[in-house]
Image (tube, rainbow, N blue to C red; front, side, top):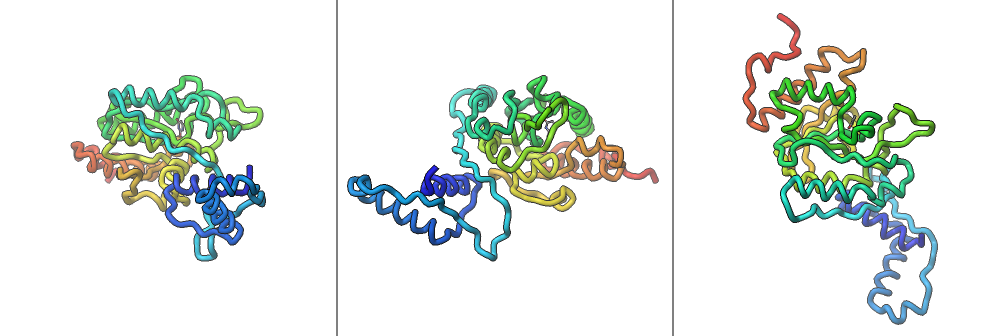
Length: 290
Ligand code: URA
């Protein structure tokens, strides 16, 4: 790839991620000026080849050094025609052979898109399919999925009434993989995030729950612990987002009633946002007995 192509790819990637300002080094500026000059006078430019040095766009000292995935992802237009279910199905079809994800070479071949009601008020987003999800081609069907179903039941909601999806639509691959899973990388998340944006545009949920730190990073671009990210409303594509612990976290031996209560408090906020009725019994779930 030429320096100019690399620079354009980098800038498009930044635009896709919503970055409004970038600082370019001198070399990148020279390339951009040259591209501009060529665009104004294509006939003359064709006679002279472009310089092929690699371009680098650098962050200034003041900016936080957040590692950005170097992957260019075309924006996906949500299919315009049909019912929400038909539009989601059309989107899932596009994901089947999604080149930006495939060309990374780090994701497995089976595409797992979403499940549930494409017109739901509540959308839940996890990180990526695991072994069970890949087998059944449905998000959250393993042990973590059972826990998620329990949480929804406690909220008075059926799994079928909400929309459940993942940031990454393919199971991250590892060497000699059997049932073991790994969390997706930033590049892998960036390769699929346009689908999540299109899903939100179709489903139009009133509220989104980001399940765990990885989903929150992919969705909101935040890094850090779930503890630091939860407890307030964030936003994705104009929709309020609540961060909570991944249901798998609640399955760990060292996760106790306090963690369950924390998740439950997040869900009470979500229920309030959705205007769902909350009984006194529900409010007291997972509180220590008096
Ligand atoms: N964990 C996730 O984040 N997503 C799934 O679909 C399953 C487990």
